[in-house]
Image 1 (spheres, one colour):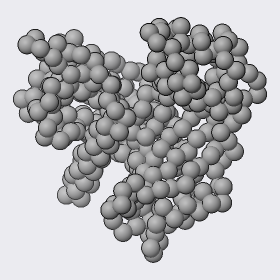
Image 2 (tube, rainbow, N blue to C red; image 1 turned 180 degrees about the horizontal axis):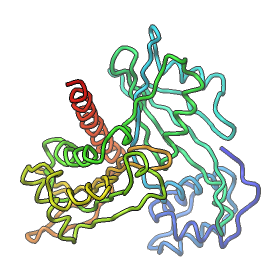
Image 3 (spheres, rainbow, N blue to C red; image 1 turned 180 degrees about the vertical axis):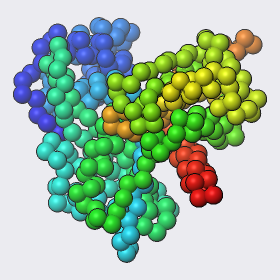
Image 4 (cartoon, one colour; image 1 turned 135 degrees about the vertical axis):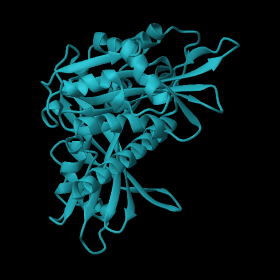
Length: 363
């Protein structure tokens, strides 16, 4: 963890504590240091803490919380496939950790077994990157992400990355590459292998298969289409079309999915594909059949780097006879479990489409 080069001003601390971090964090932070202020407002508590003289550990804790509060966690991943005899990705990463093979500014944590009865290992990488801004206290941006490694078959390991930003998956792949042999390969959910029509099928099938049977798909909240051929559409400068829930086109798409139709036959979708557009992202809303819960999940292909990622964009519970929606915050573990389930189901949808595509090519 990097050391601060200077002590932040009271203005900077107040700005971060009152505008970025939440009150529950401030209460815990203060009470762990013997400070108890009852019935205080958020900005009053921030003001009291900003008057204290804080050590390096305190300041780094505040910085980390500020970045975590601003980060929108997504889940991405890949498969590491190797022809090596007795290939073990955990051992590969362990050697990188032991030999301090991370890039300059990277700090690797040791892998640990998550469950006594399962061979799933977790580790983390933290690093700093410059980010210009008016608050110098946050210019050396702290980034931290966790990832898991699990052998799914001989020579194949699944890696799931709990990302703070899309580049986290790229950071991990580049690190692992330094320890892998030439007989190893990364398998990803690659949009370049999906035609424009198959991109429609991917998001269409994902609406029905993204979550388990406890959840019922209800509506599409948002759809992003990108124009260009199958590779150009993933470039940052490609033309983007956003379609939102309130539009007639989105109502038609939701109806098509609910009625079990093939989405590629929808008139709006057909026109988009004919005009060179492909699906790049979709936000789905699901209602729990057992509990009064509503969740919105976004699945998206990002352009730079090219990566598929899943995030929980909203979570609510319903209350009363009118089923009033009340925003709630998922626990970090439940949030990650849902993203993991959705990403793994997306991987299965993608694999099925690629197999069907390859089979059709051989006929």
